[in-house]
Amino acid sequence: MLEAHWVWFDASMVDVIDDLTSNNWDHVFVINHEGAPQGRIHAVDVLKIIARKKVNRDIAWMHGIPAQQLVNLPPITVNMDTPLLKAGALMLAHDLNQIGVVNHDGALVGVVGHNTMARHMPKFIL
Image (cartoon, rainbow, N blue to C red; front, top):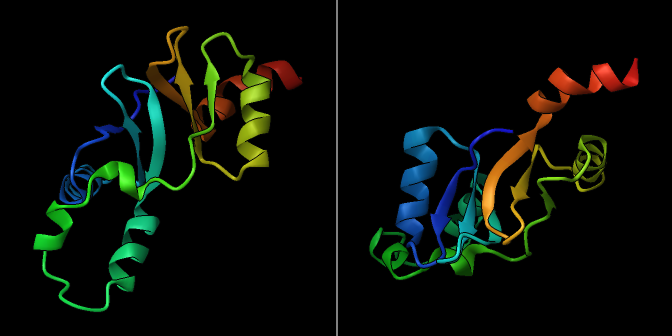
């Protein structure tokens, strides 16, 4: 399991863009104050929002848009005790590069990605 990339639900669109670009991330999870994931924002989705903005593309309007409004679907997550094979199947079924891992309280604790699968799955398949 790897560390999850996240922002608070009330972070602005500017904060999301700054995190994505300065850290070279392709996505971030949006979490509430309890640490529970509320959604996932992909860099491509942010670009689509900016491209649809027809008037006044200056940065000022981005400060007023909270990260929560950039989320259109709840995130797909697994529990810490979910078998790795099931997490991999969910990733394939939903065309995800990573899937969030939550603890028993529902707080985001990490992610499982293709690199984790590649390291551990051959042991189970062989």
